[in-house]
Length: 119
Image 1 (spheres, rainbow, N blue to C red):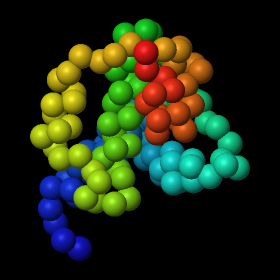
Image 2: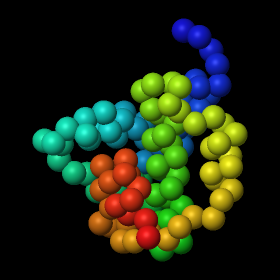
Image 3: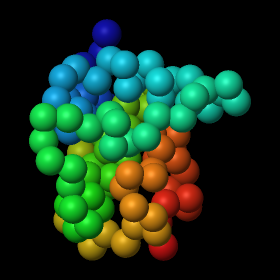
Image 4: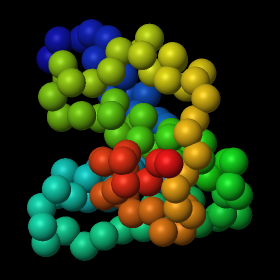
């Protein structure tokens, strides 16, 4: 295995998801690998979040959604398609567009297509 920046980005994605879901995200990662299949049952993002915490409110929900999207991009199966850590850093520091629907209605599958949940 070649050690390079894309492995660091992958590790960042795993750690970010681990913080958000409260455990190793293996189930979420398995789901994401099959989410593009038509038979994939939708999982709501709110159900994937750490249930020990209170559900995030509007502004925090926006940040949670964008963090998950960024983490998922870092876990792209093709290393060359992953963002660089510089791109991750820039994305984290930008203003986030508002969500077009409440967090409780956003599915994990929709996170793969931002046009379905941002205004």
